[in-house]
Image 1 (cartoon, rainbow, N blue to C red):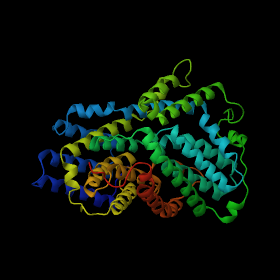
Image 2 (cartoon, one colour):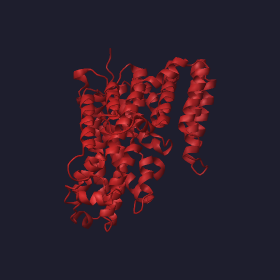
Image 3 (spheres, rainbow, N blue to C red):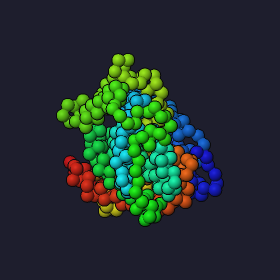
Image 4 (cartoon, rainbow, N blue to C red):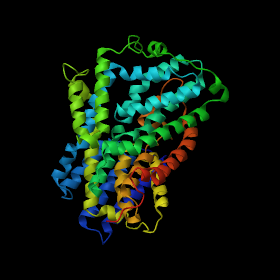
Length: 475
């Protein structure tokens, strides 16, 4: 990420945050730890926005400053790396490597899209397949890389239908990003949100809790986005034309003619499918057996990399783990602890009117979170900055912090405005015959308000029915 004075929005935000750091240092009613925390937090955010420095390096530097100055203890800093959610993500990546090695994901996608008879069926079956990958592959960039061969195969098979290929190029990253909210492991930002809620409120959302709340939103938003892509990119004649893609077509164009797209499952695929199904089933049935999701994932990773039953070597699986993301999560979690324990978060949100209607509070949170990708391109960085403040402000406005944090995190899943806004968008933007920045802006003009309104609707009407009320329950 590079910075240029030609980006006035980033410059203004960076200067505003520097002014906040200076003002907080001079504020007489703020303690020394709180002033230092605000200064470090503001400068770290400025660096994430404006400097071509790795986000993880900035986060680690901020965590070290807070530790060295005594705002947080060294135990607090290092304990974040041993959190159960970190282990969950590590083991999920090993499982994903095992799935990728067998080619099971490509086979499943090919089987699903081969049932399409019309363009609309192809788009929605592809959407359904992409949503399902959220259970198998953690992180949006990993899922985008996994499904890239499938898109290339479809694009090759439909090479004479340029507008349809462009629609699919937009569809793949759009659904990958919006469907990530389906599972706890869908994005690193989700794990940051869970840790912030635990540190601030003592409530920990488990895999099943997140699945219950996130999966319906992921399904609805993904299929609405599919319609938006279809209507904004293709013409009526394009949508009326029949389409037929067989597993053999995918196999012929996927870049590996020997890939077992059709026919019976191989032994490796059968073992991997059984293991993945067992792990997901155990995750979803956690309330019955009480085995933590991280422990289930660890067992699955050990089996997936075992010499007798596994399909990937452990060292190869560990190479796929985004260690930089894990360190980033640990450092930003420590920063969140410092914001809370020092009183800095309470001071930042102290000026918010207490009589704000809950619906208006959620609308503001969702609007800011939706637009934040224009300033902070890292989804994890956005959650690290926004969620601690949202959780602290929610209590003052009488809003359930869980609802507010989930709404902010879900809204941050929209990052489609520019090719550089998200890695999946950038990955597909560079492909031959793909979309242009103008196509992306045209889709974003429809998708941004649509997804924001959907998140607010779920927060106000659907999530309360699933056990997460809008209003903060009084003890």
